[in-house]
Length: 436
Image (cartoon, helix red, strand yellow):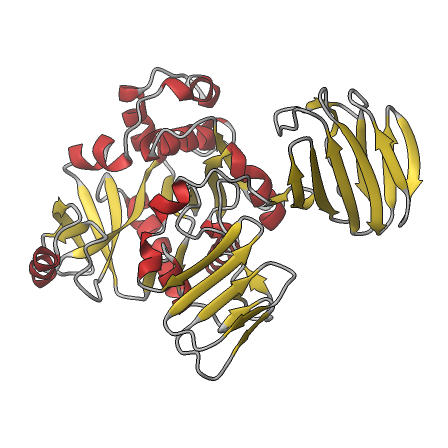
C-alpha cells in the first residue's frame, strides 16, 4: 500500500504534555505487547506494518515535527515537509507530488490518505487495505471509509451512502450536526466521516493542477506559502460525483481530549503519583521528577510537565484549547532526531537545559552569534568538536564555548549533558549550521 499519514495539530488539547513541537500523536502513553510505552504515531506505524509489511509510508507534517518523527520512527518512513500550514488539500497535493517525483510512484497506483492519530484495532488497517484495493480497481474515482456510529455524535461529519451494503455509492454528506439530526442520519444508515481517502495518484494530481501551477514536487514546495488555505473536502470531495464508501464496523476512536485519552490509558497513573483509596475515576500523568499526591479526587485529570500543570474535571478537560492558546509559554521538552532536551531553568539572560543524546548520534555542527555556552558532561562518553578540534569527553568534563565558536558533540554511549546558555538574546533562531 502507498499510505500518506497526515500529522498536523498545534498540540493545545492535551496541554501541558503537548505543545507546538510535541503534538498529541507523539506522547508516549500507551503500552505495547512488550509492556513498553509508545505514542500514537508509533502504534499506527506498527499496526500498518503488521497488516502490510511492505507498505510505503509517507508522513506529511510541519517542520516543527520532523525531528520528533525521526526520533520515534528513525528512517523507517519518508517525511514530506510542509513549509507552512495551508490546510489538508495543499498538504495532500504536496504529498502526492512527493510520491511521484521523489518516490517514483506511478500515477496509476492507488494511494491512501488517513490521519496519523486514530486509536483503533488492527481490523481498521485490514479495512484500509480493502479500501486501497477498491481504489486500485477504479470502480469510483474517490473512495472513503465510513465508521458505523456508536452514538449520535455532534463532533463528526456524516457520510450518507445510497445503500447499507459493505460498499456503496455516496449519496451526500452532512456537516457536524445537532444530536437530534445525528440520530436521524444514523437511522438512514449514515456513517461517521473519519477523514480517510483513497484514489489513484493521477486522479489527485489532475485535480491539483486545476488549483496549483506546478510541474514537480519542488514547484509546489517553493510556492507553498502562497497557496490557498482549503480543505480536501471543499477542494475535492464536494465536487466529485463518483464517490464510493466502504463501511467499517470495528472500534474507532478519535482521541482529541484528555477525557478520551484517559479512557485508553492502561494504568491509573503514569510517573510519580499516589492516589489514596478515596480517589475515583481519576488519572494522573506526571513527567516531572517530583511526586504528586491525590486525595479524594473524583472524575479528574491531573497532568504535569515542564510546560505546566493541569488539574481538571474530566468533562471540563474537553474545553481546554482556548485557555491553552493564550498561554505564552516556551516548550520545555522536545524530542529531536539525535535525542531530547528538557529546559530546567529560564532567566532573562540565561537558560539551563538537560540534553540527552542517543548512542551514535550528534547535534548539528553549529555556532551562535548572541550567546555563550557551557557544557558539563553528567554521564556517558563521546567526542566534542570545538572549532574543528576533537576531544574525548567523559563525566565531569566542562567545555566552554564563546559566541561564534563552532561546536558539536557526538555520543558513543547515551550522553547526558547540562548546557548553560548565557546572553542577552537567547533564541532558537540564533543558530548557524555548518558541514562537519
